[in-house]
Image (cartoon, one colour):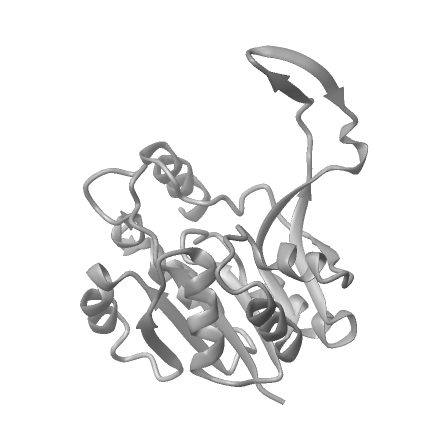
Length: 215
């Protein structure tokens, strides 16, 4: 049985600033290195980084000593990048994770690996704690009951053939997460409780928060 991890690193970091956020250092270590290290020490067999072409060479240099890391060119969208990663190497199960979520821990990754064998499709999520409003034209039109609402995180884990079928079926679309593709096929996706610390680095202020969590 083979388990792969696909790490998405194909974005341009347009909201972050002049530097790619994945190469920003937190306490002396690159964001992407924290992410990859969590998977490196997990029960994953191979890590496939789907990278923006602008940082491809830098990532190859950064991970040149890592035995189970493969770096490939990502796509124009997140969906295309993940599809490239799926086609790069067949396996039995695959975990898909945002490269910009460096606070993921190895224990949760291993839990995903064990649970996906039974559930076939699952997503790490946290329960929504804020009150959510639906707004139209600057006016609140309703308050949504948050009792059933969750915030999606990564990793998401799938039986390989299932998620590959989803990517083939919805090729050319622009899904923002892989679980949504499986849901659109009418298949069940299950929830694993995540951590509110598992933030995605998007802006400079996220770096400051990550410094605290990773110190």
